[in-house]
Picture: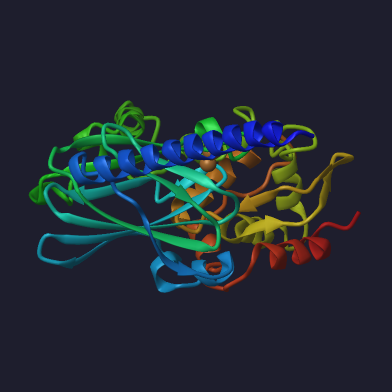
Length: 320
Ligand code: CUA
């Protein structure tokens, strides 16, 4: 090749390199500009480890809101397919709020509407970010990274309320789900203080197991019929309580179909809610079994089991 040819090529290579450098510089300037003028946040990495190690920290054993000083609160949040734990976070207006976020399973995206809060939530990392909400209201939280078949159902709320209202019930500030349950109770279908298992199911379980609890063959096992069958087995009731509290991880076969998904634990729900959702499921189909009591659920709490431990236990309860 002639020398002039080489020079031509080298000239165009330099132009490409300079062009890509300018684009990168442009992005850096835009980020710096938005940080300086728009109050954008970059989440800091507060800790790293295996998801198991991180979730065993006191911060995440009971995720939620803690007051750490006058006008200062701390919020720990766990993302999992397909829910935020806790689903509703209530913080005082104008307080300094520090969020700690981590994921149990895969990467999720935490985005809070009408704010510039947008953080990638990564298993094995704790992201920290600080913010202040200066406008009271209900802010919808969505997941903005595809995380599986129920991704679109991964919703949560941040309720920003005057400090004096922190103890108010959800319905008082317009939670449609809570208001609906209360309205039903007022109509006489629910005893005072009773939990509607169907509502708990619709809220937390239906995104995977389907509105009729029929499951999705090969992805999420059916619960209608299956739960009642399990409850009728020796040790089946305690096993079901443990699946709800600790989750289930490992291959299983239900009605001839194989499943290898991960069921997250729901220990953040109350004993009443878990008993009510089991009652709702056993009533759908299968043999009649006695109602679950909150005490039955409570007896299985705080055993420190892993989803894999619960899977190992399943082999003892369910004999093929
Ligand atoms: Cu979580 Cu998408």
